[in-house]
Image (cartoon, rainbow, N blue to C red; front, side, top):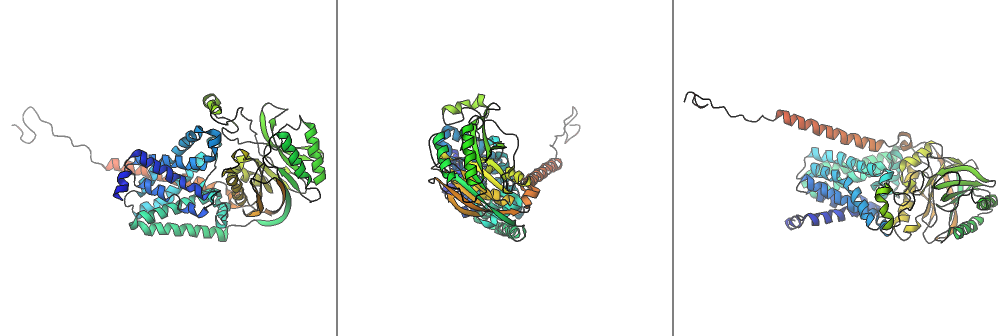
Length: 521
């Protein structure tokens, strides 16, 4: 152990180990999907940080661990952004520097039971604040939130209905902290074990008492996935061919993927007529996604557009949250050089201003989202509040076809469904397409990245309001309160110490008539 500690005295070696430790949680996400690993994946990172010789070094360990996590989580961006991927990972990784400092503050040496108890509350709260900050769309959005690794675990999905993915993240970090203490601090095993038991109790309580969605019939929704096809005209023709196969299958809605139409339908009435004819043949409205320069206003938009037997229905949703660098370059005047080193957006796309709930006939109301908007819990929650019975995400990850990105993206829909108590359809151009019921359970089979097909899903509908929809993001707000109270307590403690500290000793002054000890001499 001493040899290892000596080896880690090198800053670069320690930083490398921190980055590798921070990368471990990615194994809990698709494609590896080792969901159980999430509950111990942070232990090596926590153990390293608590051994840091100083608070400054602990902050560096947090930073480099965050860099490793971000780089591993987004490694599939490398072919598109090249070296810029490392720059982004380093910038976002800095968010974990304060968390690293907190880990050492609570767990260094032989922590008391009080410090262990505080760690089980403050450290998960600190992690949640990191996730909250990086969830801002301008920083890339909430892709890779730790709780999202539990998308196929039924008790975790029940937790999501209570507090969103935030609650899952909080409990996963709490378990990791407790396990780290159990392994590294023998004298503090009792409070650590109590933390694990408390987490199990919270999960059991959510399982027992959280309300379940009330079944309310079903809908037949078809997903059209053309596969990898070069050229917008050839792709449209393939989508048309696949949609025609749905005639006579009594579907309620047909959904095409993101960028399924490459022309503005007002400018191309011939395409609008072909879509209207398909709607007549299938007996269902078709929700397409137009990625084109608009004829009625300047700029390029990505829009979910509803087409019925009579043509364009007028229902349209313009994507509100754009992918940084993929669909726009933030601070283009400063970072525009990114287009020269990767596949960054040559022109910024325009943003929509409001979410839309569409009536697609057959008494069905749907709430569309586009691409990585499905990663944002608040967007699906607002759609559920506005009356959407089915959530729909139109997506395309064709640029990252042979990476972990398609499966990671598809898994997010399970969480959004569980959070809102509404089923969710994730329809893509090239896979993975998937459908989940109102409790996050998988409906039917995935359409993988090698499929060029259409599938009809029997989507169960539900009514009722989940606690997460009712109370919103109460978990991150509680985490913010916990950290604020702890900081305030530390501030008060510091002031008390300063006041109680003895003042500086002032030597007795000599006079012209003698020394202080012997007056007159």
